[in-house]
Image 1 (cartoon, one colour):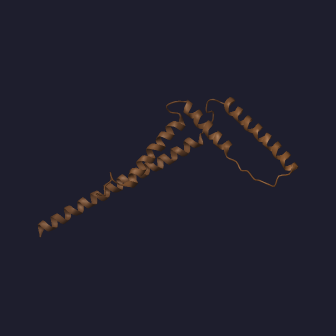
Image 2 (cartoon, rainbow, N blue to C red; image 1 turned 45 degrees about the vertical axis):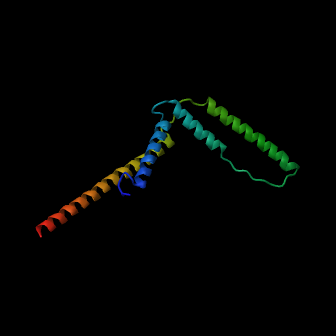
Image 3 (cartoon, rainbow, N blue to C red; image 1 turned 90 degrees about the horizontal axis):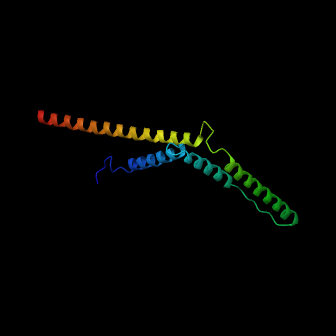
Length: 142
C-alpha cells in the first residue's frame, strides 16, 4: 500500500474531526436555525443539573427524616430549575456563548493543522522531486 496523503490515517482523522466539529459549531451557534441555540443551551443546563454526588450512612430515625427533607428540597430545586429553564429567555441574551467560542477555537486549531500538514507534505514531495532531478542530471553528465 502506498503511503500517500489520501491513505494517511492521521489526515483522515483530521478531516473527519473537522467535519464533525464544523457541524456541531453550526448547530451550537444557530447559523441555520435559531432553535438550535435554545436547544443547545437547554441541553447544557439540563446536563449541569443532572450531575450530582450521593453519600450513604447507616439509617436511623433522624437520618431518615433529614434525608426526606433533603430529598424534598432537592425535588423543589429541580422543579424551580426546570421552571426557570422553560420560562427563562427563549433567545440567547448572552453576547458571549462559551461553548460556541470553544468549538470555534478547536475548529481553527484543527484547520491550521490540516493546512500545515498539506504544506509540509507538498514541501517534502517537492524536495524529493528536486533531488531526483539533480541525481538524474549528475548521472547523465557522468
